[in-house]
Length: 268
Image (cartoon, rainbow, N blue to C red; front, side, top):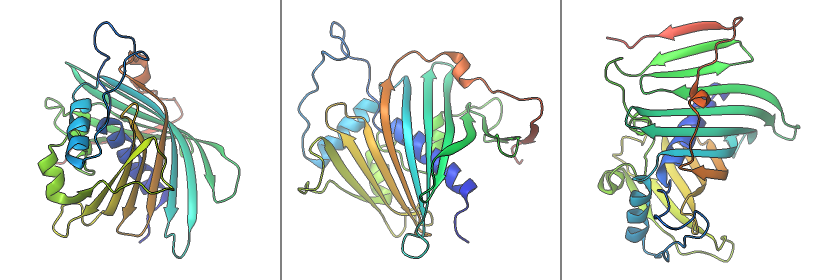
């Protein structure tokens, strides 16, 4: 069975959330402003790139980005295209981490974008999806109430997180390469290619995942995943903001009175 829009939405959420955690930068060094600090020259070697990604991830406390998401169902046969826009928010502190994605528009094939509201939230215990078209709020418990997990630990169950996961763990599941740039490649991006190994735990979900990293900010610019169902998830990240204070209200769960609420407790 081919991927439905609902499944594609959740898959996109996982990709977006994972991407947010891959390369987020720490605060600038003391005594230098955000724009005045110069980044160290980026090495072209794969090991150096992976090490820098790991170091960047260690300093993330918050992340915000606008997203353009393209889902292509069966490019060789159907080539059905769905484009969505969204905003991603992430925060982490001593009390835990929270994630939120606000989807706001959708367009299919050549049609103009129209409003299509959905929100996805994760608070360490509950994954919640708010569908404004169906007027439903579905919450799925992911872990015991007294044992919350970090957002990226949750994500890594479904998607490899370079930077947060140890490099040896990523290499256990993927052949990782940093191909030499071609004339068609943007000069300001680093390209990484992850090909799934035959015995990988991701072998039933993906065949290949591509990442593009901005050389100046060392933040993700684009992620593209190829599923085993021959679908493509292509996400571009724009207007990123790193380690800026996000208000707690950003992660507040809105519950409109006329929406039905369904809770799915953790199976014992």
